[in-house]
Image (cartoon, rainbow, N blue to C red; front, top):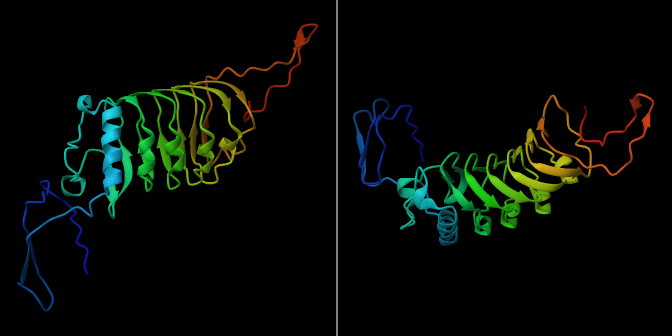
Length: 242
């Protein structure tokens, strides 16, 4: 079994193309091997295909900038914009700035091998579906610049492989949960420009290795502040450092 990699491709290969490989050296020099069919990996499951159709419908896919043809389960034959597959499993969804408009369906849980989700700079709204917290292989989740609201689901704590968690410039509110301090592999944590008003636990990370952005929150503190002469002494709530 051999894997052939193309360094440069002048045109897109289609499944209807016929590929010929000419041997230029070795004992089989000048031999030609003809292949009659090209595929791009194994087909995805019917369950995964149904999840794609639900995602497309829930986010106004017909008005995306770059659309999918979801009439047939042929992702492994023609490829869809922003979708990465490996061994018949969907491993990445990269659809930034693609005019996604609507809500993320809970059916995203039916893509269990996802490692990367990037829906940055769209018009997604509603709460973060619990289904996303079942994606235990997820390494990068970027939902920045949308209109998500509500709390961060507690199930996000189960995403222990996360290296990037970015939800900046949304409408999330409530408490910054303590588990955001406990991701073992995190390298990029951005929850800036939301409406969180409380924090459960100081975020303990090595700032030389982990990027953290908490800007533009309004943290509520019920304690009374005493004015002593021209000086106010107050203990600020522990977030990271000031």
